[in-house]
Length: 286
Image (tube, rainbow, N blue to C red; front, top):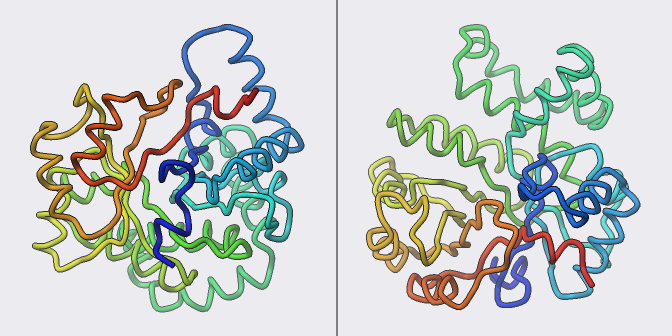
């Protein structure tokens, strides 16, 4: 089974929850927004939505590691729910918990979720990185943080893990492959899944990976008819996409509407697998 077969839903699309869980909802203040906020605050209602969307053919959901999500999914994988695909590291979520509970409290909440056995394993694996951590080397810190987050997801056996776009693009901006190397190493160490990248600089990604001797197994990047946030421009992104052997999904950037015919046409031109669906109507349902 290919990765597209494993996680793709209707029209090859991928269900998206990461921005919605982080609070990135549409700007309207109407009844739909209020219902959606209520649904994502209630693990029981969120589980109902996930079950309905799995029944509609969405096999997997792209998501950040949030306490509400894990409550909704339950302690064990369920065949009637989409498989969660981690987006790591969830720095925003950690900072929200730090504001609410303090830095120590936020760390303790993470430790409680992953459990003592997972923490012990992380500690053993981290021994070799102690000198780098003592020097506060960023890649070593990133790898340790990602490994801690992935401990939440291991029970669901995610077929792919994605690096947050901010981290991918930081590596591109500073020409620093060590950030991506740390991510790939963390995914290999903690999961049996593929390693994928989110990026807002797709045009530069392929060349950088080739020069660094690195390979990704999936990418999520902006692709739309208007060319919004397709860097450096739409034509160069489409040209680069056609040369890629890994599957690509169009990042809808939190848009509340589904892809229209013009967007689908652009995705077809680039040979994309589908789009990441975060639109509110899909989540609210009939």
